[in-house]
Every structure is written in C-alpha cells, then in structure tokens.
Image (cartoon, one colour):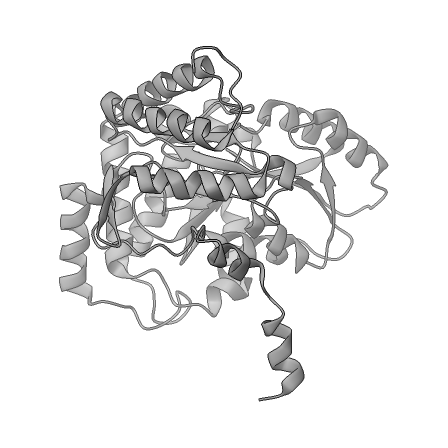
Length: 401
C-alpha cells in the first residue's frame, strides 16, 4: 500500500481517543428489534435514542405487509428505479405520498439522504442561489455542495438574516430556500410562515425537508407545511421513511413537471438500486396506520409534553425545542461522552452529539420520545439522568433537582 495513503488514515485519532477512555458510544450493536426496551450487547436498556417516533417498526400490520412483499417480490429488485427496479408497490407509494402531502406527484428514492443528494443538484444550476439554514441536515449541505449553484447560509431560523441574504443576492437565477421541517438535533420547527413570506417577496422557491416532521406535525402527521397550513406555498416537500414511517427510503413531492424532470435526470435515482419491496410495503402499511388512526401521534405529543414539563422543572437545558426531539445541552464534549456512558451503565440508551457535528459549546444529548413510551419509562429515564448529572457535575438550573 502507498505509504502516504496509509498515513493519511493513521493520523485519524479522534475516535481512538474516546475509545481509549472507554467512552465510545457509536456503532453499538442491537441483538433484537428496537422497542422501548432494547438489547445492546446482551444488556437490556431503556431506548430514548430512536427516531421511531410512532413506534411502528414492530407494529403487526407493518411486519405482516413487509413479510408478504418479501414472499411475493423477493428480497431485492436488483436494479434502479429507472430500469428494472420499479414495482407496482413503488408506484402505489408515490401516489399515496403525493396525496398525503397535498402535492401533484411524488418520487421515491432508496434513502432519505439520496433525496437531497439527488434532488438539489438536479433542479438547480449555475447562476442559481441556494439559501440554507445554518443548522440544516448534512444531506442538504452535501446536495448543495455538489450543485453548480452557489449557496449562502443564514442564521438558524432567523428571518432577518435570511432577508439580508436574499436582498444582497444579485444573481438573476432562481433563488432556492431549503430548510429542515423539524431540525433533527435541536428539535425546533422551521419558521415556514416567515420563510414563505420572504419567498413571495423575493420570488424564491421553498423546499422543506420533513424527515423528522412527517408523522409528527400537521394533520395526521402531514408535516411542517400542513402544520402551518402552507402546503400550497411550499414548492417541494422531501423526507424519509426511516423515522415515523418505520422503513427505509425517501421521497420528494411537488408539481408534476418538477417530479418528472427529477425522475429522468437525477443521477442519485437513475444509478442507485431501488427500495426493496419489503421496505416499500412497510412504508405503505405505516402510512395506512397514521392516516386512519391519529391517536398514536396524539400519544407521542402527550409523552412529549409530559417529559418536557419535568425536564424544565428539574432544570435541564433543553434549548428551544418544541417537538419530541429534546436536546439536553451539556456544552462540553468530554462530559457529553461521559454522560452517555454512565447513563448506559444505569440502563438508558441516548445519543451524544458532539463536535465536529456541533461546536463544543453546543454539545448535547439527544433525548427522543416515542408514542410507545409509558409515563413510567419517562420517569425512570429522567431519574437516571438526574442521578448521573449530579455524579459528573452537570449543573441544573432548578432546586427541584
């Protein structure tokens, strides 16, 4: 092997430093399915680190639909959507998602990351300008980075900052504003009313990535645009099936001309294998459930309100969250790792978010709710967090702790 090539990777020691301290908290293997209690390396722990907001990954109807599709279609389509990878299930899912999101058409990709990787550079070109919230998901940034368009960042959910960027942009090309519907680490909701207002003023196009919002916000979980009654004002709605919809894959929905163009021009779609039939069927079954029964989503919000009330009373720093994604700000990388490690020892699974993903001063623990959690489980998890916070010197802002 080329020595220079080998040395390039030998120099990477960020993960090893954490491993050497016994605090590594990534790639933890599960030995059974993910429910509110999970088995990790033979240890049963409470799960508060999942994106399965509605808890549908183990729902009998979802599993049955997936099993039936596996038997009927086999394990893979063995090709891209463009060639031999499209089944009637894919087409049904696209039609259903378009109707669900209030758009003319939708297109299904094999992952949510690929939606942004395949959509953004396909529909933007040289001379266009993309406007990105500073805290957008990495897939949005990656799709923008490989686009021939230029891109500008505005301060998180700051409409004055966005307007300054829009106002100083001299390009005569298309102005394209892209935001997360719910921000995946911070848990706050995009200010779509403000964004839509500015888009109309500056003749811009708006795209909302509702990966974490579908199933959570809006009528029966139709996402952030529905939540604000702005479905007709948001041009494109993207997202993933890997969270509330209990599967894997992604979607983009919009007017029929745009979707038709992406379908034929997106390299990430044309040259990638399609969603497996079983995954497609699982997403369809999940959509059936959330369309006919909103009580599951309502239970998610009951859990969210219950947890938030306690966490704020105790004095944890939860930032500006307003959704089932609750950040517990530690604001110190090492203590964040230590917090997660000791919580796991106590019996609680949560995820650390540290630099370079965020600034060290913004390091946090991502505590996320599912509809399937009980109040007793929430109480137990919070009790563990209070205990460990005291052990390692995390300051709480209330005497209630």
